[in-house]
Image (cartoon, rainbow, N blue to C red):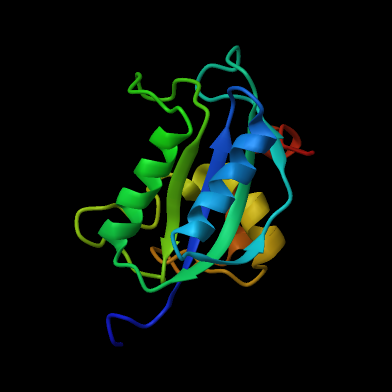
Length: 165
């Protein structure tokens, strides 16, 4: 595959500070303005903050995008967008205006020291359920399990605790 060939990428975008929906829409616009082609977007989902459910609830979406960016370039753009939307250095899992995770980068496993697929994505309802909404036959690169099987592996409380907004 030539380096400039477009890759299919899935991004998870979340926000639990400020106007959550507006933050995510701004993120989508900034990705698009950097030449990242948005193919599909899931609906918005609301979940409790993890690991502290007393923090504000998250809105999350999954985007299916295409880009010819190398993974490191994409990662840097995601970090720049998070910062431009007000994300500050804070302890892990702190509330934030914008969080962008690379869930899947062209079905590759760990590229250039950036963990893809995201190491805990297969355990997270706010990733799996919106991803299933837009890509019913997606397979987890690490185990080749279909997304439906990953969702069935979640606890009932995880499945019940996510809400379509």
